Image 1: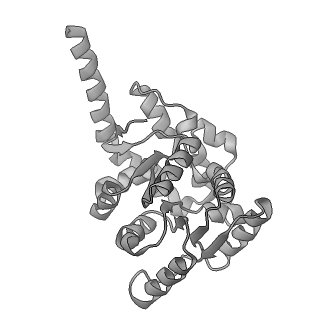
Image 2: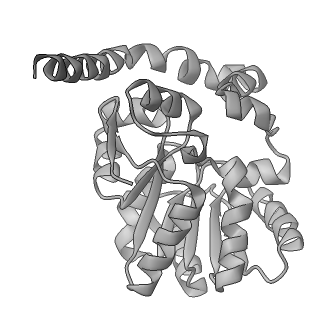
Image 3: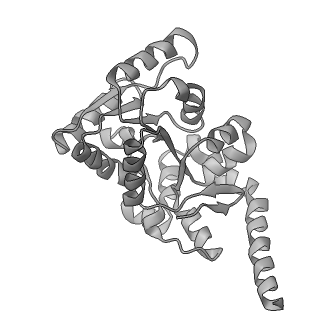
Length: 257
């Protein structure tokens, strides 16, 4: 599906199966792809952080991760539905089953020491035959520490590299290191392994379908997330209005035709 512009950023409303298809195509063609995602938090960071803008300008896929964006796209007249919201809480297992079925090696970088390993053991138990290795995300992104992490990843040679260190750290790490990574696909995956390991409570999936996942997370971690969910959307109000003006302008043009 074509790229849409919402709140001043480009997104691709893709389903899980469509992303899997695009990954297979890239692998067959020998291309390296970066798969990123957008939600209201990422859009705020895009508009306030130059390095985040640089990251998104060089990604091949930027899918929707957040029901508010799905709802907004529909209000703006786009044919987008719930299947176009791809979030790792729901996607991680289908993605890893796809990896197992296609013989893709997977590496996860992120989480506190021990957490990613615990999640990997759970996932390998659920998906026999899955080739999966991990490394925690608590390392210095500069100097020798980073060099060692790159060596570990490249020695494994993953087809799929999941970078789960939270926004904007994971995006900036990918931007700075992409050229040196021997991975076919690099995905910014957030805290998905923390959810698998039980280190962070998983929001009920019905709340995700209704666009209320943010409320569950806010109540679970108010000190960390209050600004993201209560302040950042206010900053985006001019971009909401910009989208509305664009739709009104198109309708006026059709009316005058």
